[in-house]
Image (cartoon, rainbow, N blue to C red; front, side, top):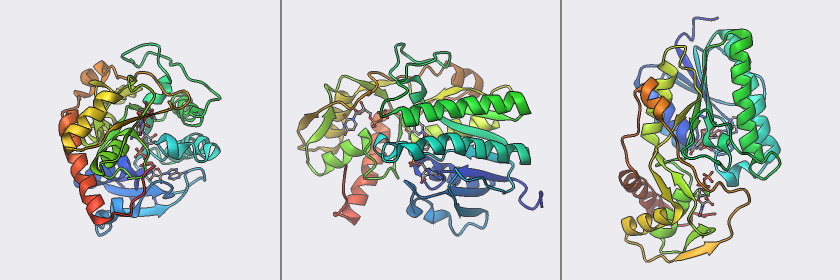
Length: 324
Ligand code: NAD
Ligand code: UDP
């Protein structure tokens, strides 16, 4: 059987926000793509435009269950990324990261496929060092409400490196920092989609805490470019490697920008800060610059414009949308 699907690339979580853009770009490059998704946070709308492409397949499957399929490359993105969604069923979130990594690594081992794990800046937890370089081991609460995601992703990294060492697999780890863009769910709950929808509706902008906490926001196109470069990079470039935009903003600055760019009449409303909310987050991308010749090209103002246009259209098409 091996050979009939030669050249096929699996994208787990391929119907999600990042995964759907990744599937699109891989198809444009001429790859055969198999999207594997259980549609927990993924949506068929995200991949509808790909369905007529004969090189694209979709498999409804939960990565916590082993899978027999042929592949040359695997991008393992399956996992809810928004705190609201990954905290909905924390046990399932940990299982998705840990069992999902084991199942995809076993598949990679059997088919001799390259595998890239979508890790996260959350492995640094509430960092005591800024910017965060890959050498930093992080500061994570192992039993807090974010632990299912943070520790699940940390364990997935451990598995990737142990399979590499023990079985000689070709592996890559990308530590993705906050990424935004069109196709984020309106009920995603993360800060960019919340603020944009609130601003477009002239509703209060919900800042959690004092708004002085920071994030560094990467536009989706830049991030996808980084993921593909990492997969294509020579074997020794295995990561972990930070992918994100190094320009840091406070959440209050973000709120001001969104209000200005939408011309909104929204006022700012303060809400309690979630437990274990990281105070600062900014990637050191020296390694990505050097080994992938990669750095983000789209700055926040420009990326927000594209994302605002997307949500404007969405709200025009459906004024019943709910926001969390
Ligand atoms: P998303 O929620 O839009 O996409 C996740 C996808 O995985 C969805 O399509 C969902 O249905 C699918 N999924 C979840 N559990 C699954 C399971 N058990 N089996 C099969 N499919 C499953 O999130 P996203 O923002 O596109 O994130 C994609 C990946 O990138 C995640 O692994 C996330 O941890 C990582 N990441 C994202 C960001 C970001 O800012 N977007 C930052 C760091 C890391
Ligand atoms: N945040 C906020 N208002 C919102 C949503 C989020 O102030 O409506 C804050 C949140 O507390 C955090 C930052 O924005 O400090 C980024 O949150 P998000 O959920 O987008 O991502 P993460 O915390 O995983 O980086």
